[in-house]
Amino acid sequence: MKYHAKVYVSLKKGYSDPEGEATASALQGLGYSVSEVRSSKAYEVSFEAETREDAEATLDEMCRRLLTNPTKDDYSFELSETR
Amino acid sequence: MKREDIKVLLMRAPGTNCDLETVRAFRDLGVQADLVHVQKVFRDKNLLDYDILVLPGGFSYGDYVRSGAIQAKEMEYRIGKEMVEFVDTGRPVIGICNGFQVLVETGFLPGFEGRSQYPEAALANSSHGYQNRWIRMKNVGKGNCTMLAHVPEDHVISCPIAHGEGRFILPSDRREKLLQRLYDNDQIVWRYVKADGSFADGEWWDNPNGAFHDIAGICNPEGNVLGLMPHPERAYYGYLMPEWTKAGAPETYGDGRVFFDSIVKYVESKF
Image (cartoon, rainbow over all chains, first blue to last red; front, side, top):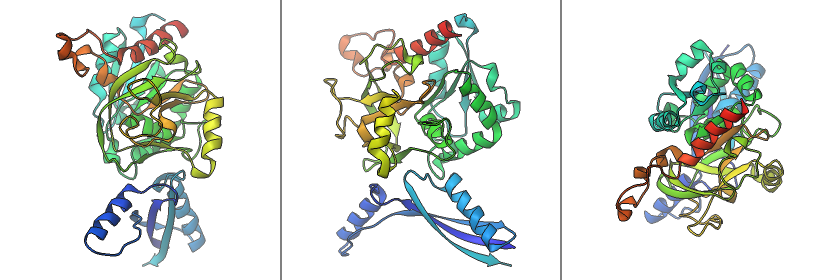
């Protein structure tokens, strides 16, 4: 089966996120009542796997091995089958 | 071994930019220094022909994903076995700036239980953005990092930093415990200090990136893998030091020389 995933990587809570802070400050400057901005990075990954379970496990491994540094990053993903 | 027989391998990746200064520093000390592209090293797998491995500074692979991440994973699957063997033989591995990031991403640093599968620390960005200027770092190692045996204890080196992602951090839930472990293993080698030699205490300017505990450089528990954010190669010659014009003429050598000199002397006497 072919799969397509959107992976979101963001800094874990508790670590300062300079990009988010600077963005929040700029949005506040524009007059928006923004209390916090957290920045994240998104990847779109297309790949093949036998089953959905396999696809989830493989994607999880990709996240831990390369897309994130588990010391500082959290991640989540949306997985869908494609034709 | 004889100094002229010592062979240094400097691995250059796309985006490396501090390679030539580092080559020049080693050659000035009378050793052989080969600057080789990573793809050639991957093909030849001849790491073990060398006595010292250096990962120079720069922005390998455009800092894609995270600084050092792509080069680290490429090294893992192309020459992972050779890297582990090189480290296990006790030969020095030095990562400067981007090289430090690569060594953290490969799991060789901090390497509490040998090379870790996933990184156990990180070099993150900071609210001060990209910083490119002079800092001071103090040698706080107590002897475990044997390649720096010829750098006096508490010796302060003034040299540049140039990075956006250099804030050394440990996992927040185990931060204090792991810091203690770094101390117990004598793995903390360089810390940022103020002009008077006291620790920067997290304060910006002297600590340029908000690094936890002012940590600028660490080694592995065995002491032969060393990573640091500052650039001693950019302070190797006297004319590279700031403010020498006030003295009229530069000294021959700058603050960074003792760093490279110690590594060469160590290999000369140990192997």
